[in-house]
Length: 374
Image (tube, rainbow, N blue to C red):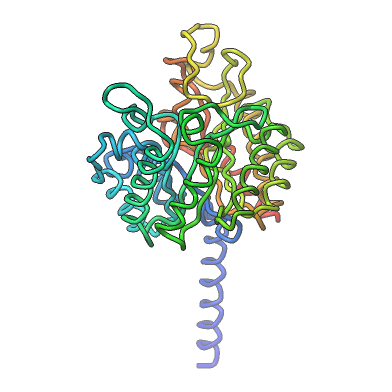
């Protein structure tokens, strides 16, 4: 009997050891790997959060714990006419995030692009006054943020208000209201949901001049007693930029003001159309075949370079995980990335962590290994 008991104990230990070995060998998902560091997010299009994109859906559900609406919460879709709000898509997006217990980011409340003309002009073509535009901004922000109060965790309140040199962009918001349009937007958002997180979001914030401009802008708002949770760094990067020093220098500047979010991470692997390192959606270039070299697949050498660059980025994000609270890729798979159509339509790009077949690229294992070895 004693031998039987000993055998049972040994057998149980073997089973436990085998289970532990199995768990160790099973690949970690991105969200599991970084659960103690920061949220891992992605931007969703309509087909994805309505669960019609059957390729992307299992990736979204298994790999990510934060989501951003790529387009459907922008002014032109949510509030296309003065007295008409269309909440169907935004409601479905929020419900998808809630169902999957995700951190939900609303993008974006105030932006110079994808905003209807009626927002800035009367029917006769004359420009609104400062007070009239402030009233329209207040109504828009209060209506939307109040609707999702307690459900949307954070908002990109103002998007891309700066030029590359850190000065204010000469948008219609700036022309009509003045520089304080940014502070007013944050004021209205705070009034609607004081408990949400609120971010200023922009691209090229690895550029020192633009980074300094963002610091001045956000600090000036915080000095007025208006909450700005932090700065969102749009990570529209490439194989040759930013450098580790540039990226880290900006994060060090921004973490003094609050949280840092990497909001729109992707990595362009194609030759540059015009040497531009930003993400201005108004820029366009005609298709040139010499700038579309990987129509039939990404060479191993380019894949290796992309993996190394992604690894470098995440090394820095992990180093500053005390401030970095979210890293969001701008799309799920290469096939649905905006980089296939911008700035040059019709190209085949490979900017994300999952390929056109929905398979993880080598970069996924490389960045997960950073956590394992931490």
